[in-house]
Amino acid sequence: MTAETRHSFLDGKIKRLLIDGRRVESASGKTFASVNPATGETLAQVAEGDAEDIDRAVEAARRAFEGPWGRTKPAERQMILLRFADLVEKHFEEFAALDTLDMGAPLSRTRNNRRRALGMLRYYAGLATTVEGRTVENSLLGGDFFSYTLREPVGVVGAIIPWNAPLSSSLWKIGPALATGCTVVLKPAEEAPLTPLWLGELALEAGVPPGVLNVVPGYGETAGAALARHPGVDKVAFTGSHITGQKIVEASAGNLKRVSLELGGKSPDIVFADADMEAAVPGAAMAAFSNSGQICSAGTRLFVEQKIYEQFTHRVAEYGRTLRVGNGLDPEVQVGPLVSEQQLERVTGYLAIGRQEGARPLAGGERLTEGALGRGYFVPPTVFADVRDEMRIAQEEIFGPVISAIPFTDIDEVVRRGNATMFGLGSGVWTRDVGKAHRLAKSIRAGSVWVNCYQAMDPAMPFGGYKMSGYGREGGQEHLEEYLNTKAVWIRTDL
Ligand code: NAI
Ligand code: MG
Image (cartoon, rainbow, N blue to C red; front, top):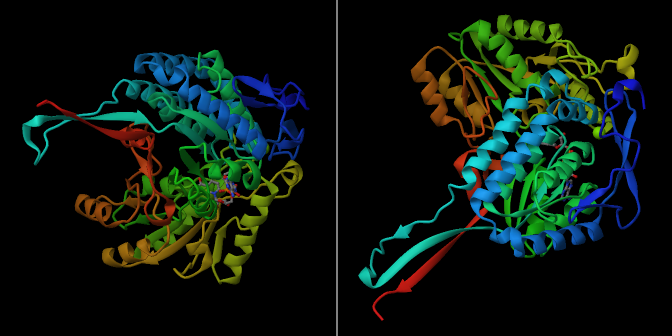
């Protein structure tokens, strides 16, 4: 390990699974390497969980749910979540660095996430004491019944997360699950298991009882699939690709477990000629280039009003060229590497497809291989102009820093074309015309509409998909619903 990658969590030992409050070997004894995508260097060997380990973890989670955890008071869970947030805060700089090392996002981004990550945990801590049922005035049955509802935790949650924001995605599942009184088996992505493992250890330190949060890294086809089909799991909360989302739904059929899916997108970002250009140029660029485009709601289909199309796309390309690409440990770097060699192949594959389809690269377009960059998986901010709706680079999720810029002429047309995708996660509108903004906000079929901004996120706002971007919401009051069951209680009062 080089001095650069020294980190308190990376002590040279095998990173073990966290089951029932203990660090354990995987049943198979196998391990896999977690790699720094900026350098290709192995950061740690991680125990590779598979179906047997998932069994053990689900059993532990079930015992914890049926044990004392199931009887904790909301205020106790609130205190535990607040203590957990304090511990994450204490170590936040190291968490940011661990995310940067393991998946490549620059420190400028992972550090910036501080307020939101901590805010998320504290927001769910707050919500823990707000869960309540209601008393119901029956519509037909009259006064001989006292009827009310109870809101109960769904039980054991299988949380399967991707690699593009390990800290946030972990907290986005752990927060609502613990707030409502569920227990969790968290399966991190094989590309970035380190932050979730460390979070699991800190949760214990914060007073989360053993078995309430288990962390089992492993591959999707083995550990992930075992969790998705496990009869002892009551709900799967999944974030990742729509292809895997479909597999999760199929696997869930065995015990008809609850499923929530936060999947991918090909989000339209629509720029009108009347927009504030000083805001729209960097806004549209970063909508697609942040995290090297590895964001589910990235604004990758850039619709630009015809009369400003040339000028605007050139300005976005220029902006992209000024972004500093490199190893994310350098605090000046704005765009880090892609997460893995596999993602590099995928993205460079799309760069070739774009050229074959006749799109015109205005910036980027090729992998970077000069000097130290050659050891990592670097693709520069790329803007393709002359993109047509039917091109693959306009329809498929690339998950790299690639903008497909498409001209349009009027509002109804751009709504129709913007909606002509199987996805519906994010969307952006840049205009100074308030009427136009509201009209678009209503017409776009997507879970989020950002007007004169992009990717604004807050713990209190719901986030999620329409169409093949999935179902269920994360964030906001709506999020708790995903982790709760409703029970109807009837009491006859005339006996
Ligand atoms: P993926 O969806 O396969 O992986 C996400 C998580 O699901 C990982 O933890 C993985 O181990 C797990 N998984 C994989 N197969 C599974 C299965 N059969 N059963 C249960 N769990 C399973 O995504 P991957 O392979 O990392 O990336 C491929 C593409 O997916 C990306 O290029 C991107 O287009 C999209 N993607 C979208 C994300 C989003 O946030 N919407 C996040 C990650 C990937
Ligand atoms: Mg890694």
